[in-house]
Each structure stands twice: as C-alpha cells, then as structure tokens.
Length: 437
Image 1 (spheres, rainbow, N blue to C red):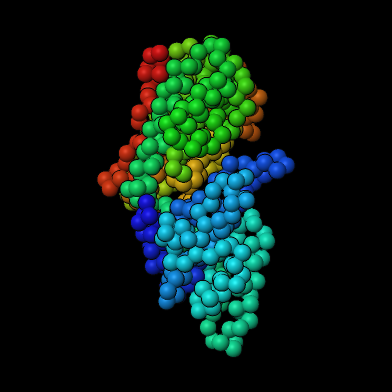
Image 2 (cartoon, rainbow, N blue to C red; image 1 turned 135 degrees about the horizontal axis):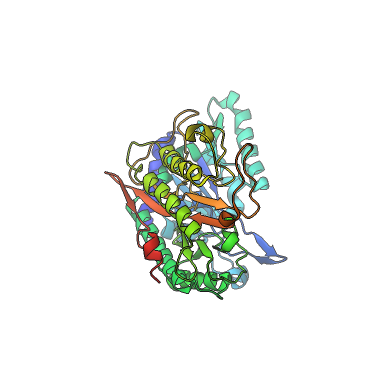
C-alpha cells in the first residue's frame, strides 16, 4: 500500500505544478464528557497518506528541492499513549508512510512557511476546524503582504477538491479489491438477514447480527447507520430506530453495508416477512425492479451520469400512472415533480472511501458528468407510500390498501471498459427468488 499512496500523491502533484497543498487530519469527536467517538480519518487525508491518527497535517510541495511530501504528527509520548493508544511518531512517519520529512505538530507554524513561500498558489479546504482554518489563512495573508517586496509567493488560495476528487472518483485496482471485500461481507450479512426475516423477530436483532458479522469478517463495522425497517417504517428513508417487531405480511427493507479498510458497501433489499409478497406489495416491487433494471442498463463509458436517474424516474412515474397514483402525461408529471410524495430521492450516488463519495455529478450547469471505467455508483430506485401521504395538488388520493408500502432496491455497480459489473449480484432480488424461503 505504501506505493499506492505514493502514486496517488504523484498524480495529484502532477496537477499542482508550483503550488503547495495542505491537508488536515480529522479531529477527535466527543461522545460524552471526556470520552471520544472511535476515530475515523478524513477521507482525503487518508487517500493521500494512509495515516490514521488525529492531530496531523500533510503538506505536498512538488516545487520544493528536497521535501515534496511532509507530515506533521503527534510525537511519541508514553504518558499520553498509555491512555489513548500508540502513536507512529516523527521518525516512523518517514519510515512507514514515505514522508520526505516529518516534524512534531507543534512545529507547524515554524516549519510551514518554507513550503509555502515559493509556491505560486495554495490549496487548502476550509473545514470544520475553525482555529486551524485561521492558522492557514494567517499564513497565506502574511506571505501575500510580502509579495510586493519579494515578487513571489502564493497569490491564490483554492480548494484542492477540484484536483483531488476527480482522482478519487476513478478507483484503482487496489481500491476495487477493498471495495469487493466490503461488498462481499455486506452480501453475506444480507443473506443472514434474509434468513432471519420471520414474524416476531425485532428489527434490532437483525441489525445486531448483521453488524456482528461485519466485525467478525474483519470489517471496521457498518458503513453507515443500518436501516432495518419493517412495515410502514420502510417509508422513512433514514429510519434507524430499528425497534419494531416484524409481523406476518410485512415488508422488511434493509439498507446496510460493511466498511472494510475504509471502503464501503451500500446495499438495499426489500424482503417479504413470512416468505411471500402481498398482491399490492408485489406490483410495486416489480415496478421498482424494472426501474432499476433499465437504469443499470444505462451504465457504460461515455453515457451521462444523469441517464441512470432519468431512466429510473421515467419507469417509476409510468408505474404510478398505471396504479392510479398520478394522472397525466409522464413527461409533464416529471417536469412538475408530481412524483415526489412517492419518490423523493435521486437514484444514484458515487461510492468509495465515503458512502456518498466525492466527485461532481455535473461537468457544468448544463452537462452531466460522463461515466468512465473505474467509477462505482449505486443504483437505488424506490417507491414509498407513507400511511399519511398527501397526494400532489390535483392528483388522486391513494387507496388504503397501498398505504404503508415502502420498497427500495439498491446495488453497487462498477463502470467497466465495455459496460458495467453489478458488484452486489450475490444477493437475489427477483421476487420469486426472495419468496423461496
């Protein structure tokens, strides 16, 4: 992995020319009083360094004669490490992580100017750490005041995401290997949940078994709060209470994925509790499934990203018309967003180090991002008929038998050289397969 991180830095620095980029690690977050949440590194920082400690700063200075990659880290201090864990320290930051130079984080203010003074631009993302934001801003302003006398220095301050995030969007083979592992564990956990989807089981019992399996297989844990939503709970997009007992005739919507090596799976299936879909449930399920099938077929290099959503939406709206939820022409209903009480989210997002991974969805105001090999995206159409749903203006009321049905089907899809690969194909989704248990 050391070479992998080095190659990532080199690709970024090739775009930077005489600029300097500064990246701040994530900070510890307090859970309650003096106890912190488990630490999770900032994804950009981790992508470039692999370094997994708080209170660190990475500097990339491709123009510097000696030091192109510099780390500022917490020094080794036994008195503190005995309480909160071992630290890599300054020397091993060079030996293990390939830094050309490393310093204690306390020396940042003293050492940083030598890597900024001859740069023509500074890249830094203003995050939630306001004191550090001010530190960088003051450094830049100080150099800017000296520009008139010296004739050189960083006159521009920009966010590095415009250079870095397109690189993160296309996954390397190493990244794809980690994603396949995260997804394989997620698939196994969904099979376990499928087996458990019986009347009388509580949602939290299924959640517990899935997340236990995530850890038992070497994952960090859940990639995001697991959604285990039975009955009308499935109509709440981010339902995480997971406290209800399953009942015969319910649908069970599970949106859960494993995080492995910082990479994530993101899968949703909607299972029939008791082994068989009701008539209304099956009709809606098949509409959502067809929307997903047609949307996935749009994934190939050169196609616009938004074709995935537009295709799924067209199928869903036509289905809503057939069911009598909407009245009118599909294109006009879509334009007026009359479908939104029943389908209120987009169909896809990028997937990678972050569950909703970085990367622009549009090239500009008018044009969509174009799909290219190595990108991974989710495809997750759904339909949600909440018990108290209010139809759009001048649209019919939804009959009682349809209310309380929530269905989503989500797969993770890799854009390949010639089309696509469904990475989550190991979990059945055809209704006759899901009714087989």
